[in-house]
Length: 426
Image (tube, rainbow, N blue to C red):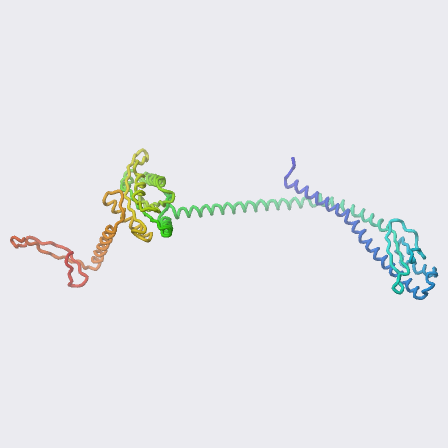
């Protein structure tokens, strides 16, 4: 089984690095030395050949017809002037390649050779050939290879044993930092996920009823406005149903709020099962619900009948078969109102009328609305008159027309907006 612990991985990495560096030292030191020295020797040989060619050209200039017969002088020119030239051979060749004269000894096969033309008047009349043995260079290269091997072995031992403890400590610290960073990243991701869940939860709580999970008033208003826009664009109708549980208060007062909450939840579940997925159901208050329906045909009674089916069967709560009833009011767009807030108000008026008449269902009518407005105006006028001290007591006699005698008086409150201006009774 392969050991994949951090320590074993560090051992393998250290061994690989030390072995690689040792191989590089063994190869790079002798190879680098050989290339550098060979380049240096070649450059020196080129300089030497150029110098010799210049010497021969000068001799040709002085004796153009007899220069190749002056072997002693040519031999002096070809003699090396450097003491460290090593094993070398200088040769002067004619146009055919034949040796005119030379200096030095025979060079073995391992040598470096440089040739340079001797030009007189634009014509090559001879050639200088300078050769040097590579034996000294190879010897020095072998010595450098031995030095490289020694350095490689030393480096291999140093890298494998001396700094290993420091590398292991550094690796351990790096691994600890990595684990700490991974832990922090994990915590950040968990916190971000919790924040997103909290945001979704808060958004759901802001738009839904906590008891039933239905839409609340805020979400109902938004869905109603969207339904009105769609209906206006497509020429459809929108019906708003307001529903109130008529005997819910009695259940709460008798069995408690816990039973009341369970009843409300079961009513919500039944409504969701009876209505379409496109219909918006909301809980407005304790026992009041609202339904927004988009209708292609003005059949408001059908939807009301579907809603009332939720109360056909009793509600079995803690062994009590509870029978509920509801009062439903409906208002339609665009017949009864054009705005969402007005539709809700009209549906609420119709619901109150259904509750007052003990009927299950009532469609909004303007007469209901005018009655409510006049009553509201009357209450407002009376409150204002009391605050301004405009009411006063008036006695009106009651007369018997047969005997023409006053048989009693009628006391009533009258109001006036101006001093000494009495409004007759209406």
